[in-house]
Image (cartoon, rainbow, N blue to C red; front, side, top):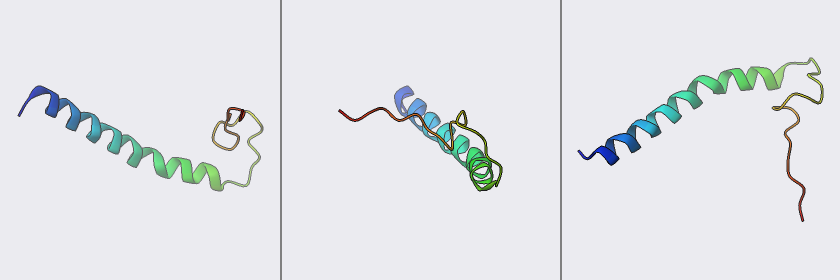
Length: 51
């Protein structure tokens, strides 16, 4: 196996593991009844203006 293929596979596995670990925390955060305020990046994402 080439080094490039190994690094690509490793990066994909790391991204999948991070996504699998983070998902439950983000779901629980989104379902809480408390108001997190306008500074909450999950509830109030900063979207760019359309031109």
